[in-house]
Every structure is written in C-alpha cells, then in structure tokens.
Length: 228
Image (tube, rainbow, N blue to C red; front, top):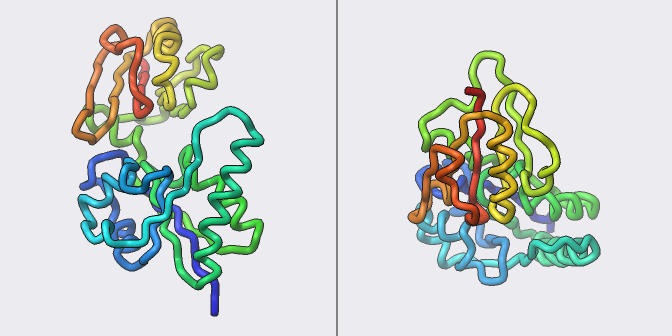
C-alpha cells in the first residue's frame, strides 16, 4: 500500500467566496482534514471552509496544535508531534488535507510540518490561496503596486527597530500585539496608511489613516503603507 500525500491548502483570508476551486475539490475528495488548533471546529480555517463545503463537518477532523510560543525547544516538540499525527494517516495510505488561513506559502504553520514530513520521506504538496494582503488591498480598493514599485512584506512585530524607509509599498503582518510601536514607525515613514482587521470576516474593520488605528488590535490585522 502506498503512502498518502500531505496537502497544505490555503482557504483564503476570511471570505468563503475567496476559496479556490482546487481547495474546495480537495476537501470534498479526501476524508482526513487537519486543522491548526486543539478544537478543529473552532478554528478560523474550519469556519471559513465549512461555509463552502458543508460536508466538511462530517469528515475526520484532526487537530494539530501548534501554540505561538517563543521557546524554540517547545516549538520543535509541537511541530514534531503534529507531523507524527499527520504521518500516522499517511502510513495508512490516506491523504491529509491541512487547512490554513490565506496562502500556504506565506508565514504558514504547515511549513514546519512540511519540512519534517519531507525529511522523513513523505510527499507533500502546497495549494495556494488568496493572501490576506491581496484581499485587504482589494477591500480598501487600492492597488498594492504599480509600474516599477517594489513591495516589502514584513512581520512587523519582529522588525520594530527598522525604519520603513525603502521605496514602494510596505505590507505589515503580525502587528496587532505591538500596534502602538508600529504606529510610531508608520508616522515616521510618511506613507499613506490603511489597515484591515479580520479581512472578509463578519467582524471586519477598516481604517484609512494611521490615527484611526487603535493602539490595540487583533492578531488578524494587516497594514498597507504606500508612498504618498
């Protein structure tokens, strides 16, 4: 019996209508669906996908818990545990479809599992989804880049000491927990700022100026800073 394939499948940023046809097909065609959390049906990825694929509720839902901790040893232990859980199904010849927010190649938890599984000889496959920053730009009705403008995508919470002084557009991800400091960086940059929180979800909020942005915001807060 051959081994199954582990798919990392992006379900888009929040609006279920932004799921790809391929993501929907893979969920429908496979019985084992892995989700990043302790309670699969409580994960954001599940709540997005089940709106487009109601039969997801009847699949075998596998929790893969990878809490956001800074301890590298604890991180690695959780990654190895998650990879082992997925491998147990692959060894039975079953494919595993791991659902992730946004795109499966951008700051995606599946990446850690992918490295471990591939090193152990398992086959993996990434299925792209619409990224949060593309969806956020569309929500505020602006192009991310034009003509020869570069774009810089950075995890803001880890780069608070670096000025936003390169030409082009900045996309700041993972900025919610340090928003006050991020806002200071944005003011210094002189760029035109907009932010979308919980893009495409029922509690979505849009801010069109740095001074509108609250000092505290949620994890799914994405900032676009464009040249004036």
